[in-house]
Amino acid sequence: MLSQPQKIRVMFSKTGSLKFISHLDLNRTVKSAFLRSRLPIWYTMGFNPHPKTVFSLPLSVGTASLSEFMDFRVTEEITGEQICKRLNEVFPEGLRALEAYTPTTKFHDIGWADYEVRMEIADPSDMVDPVKQALSGEIVIDKTTKIGTRTIDIAPLTRVDDVFVEDGELILRLHLSATTDNYVNPKYIIDFLTSKLGIPGEKDDYTVCRTAVYHADGETIFR
Image (cartoon, rainbow, N blue to C red; front, side):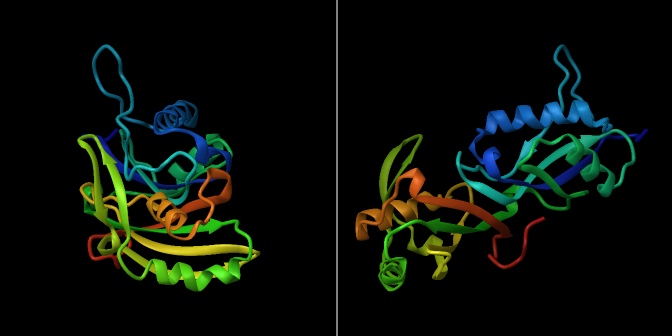
């Protein structure tokens, strides 16, 4: 038994049908897995003891991810390998613990994230250059927040790493701001291309996957 609960960070992926569950449902799924995992999870005190679990960046329903993070605490010494093994034994298909360790960073250190957008469109090869051109200048979108809607240019918060065709789909590799004040949802890019080029932007027309998360310098991988 540890003298003080130890913070643990788990990097995990959320794919397949699990990409359609909400943040609230993800939290419930994880807490249910904790109960069945036999991990020495630390619980809060009081009338309603529960694991204190904190997740990193928001993830839109329908978006997959290979780079999600959650923090919780344990009451006994246990290796990262053991934590991942026990979680993966009870996680549903589509949720997988990739790595577990003692964190030295905080979630507000996150500054950028990579995404892969795959779009099903007619004649995708014909759209590579127009998409590159459209995303090379201003990217003006209407961003809705709790205080209202405002028109902003997200080009300074966006880097287009690649646009190409693979397996008959148009692929966009995007590097987007992920700070609290300047979070860029990849759906903004899709909506912009829909308005600019007429590219289909319904949910069935594309898939999005978060592939990596970075510190504020945009180069150092967050962990």
